[in-house]
Length: 110
Picture 1 (tube, rainbow, N blue to C red):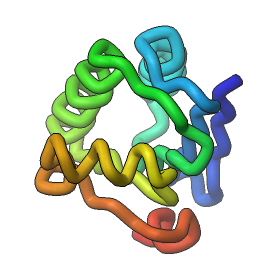
Picture 2: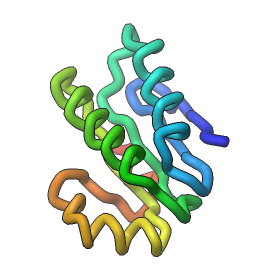
Picture 3: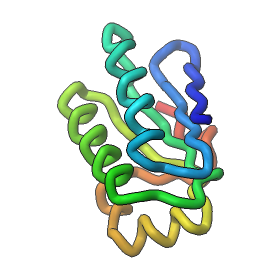
């Protein structure tokens, strides 16, 4: 199950998807962010250390979320990519779209 952690001072939200990054995993994250729209997150961090599979809909929704958040002045960044995700990110050249951090702690720094 995907976990959401909010860091004080409520400007950073960390999302930790489980093994599968599919539309069923990304949609609740999207809904949670929209639900808390009054909180002006400056950065949302997606920790990918547990992810072993991603489908095209999951990738599409992740890109959509990146675009929507950018318009609101919020960064969507990735961190702690599993070997599978690291390889996929580079093959798809997502590393040109997303900021990617090795450690979650670094990704949370504004």
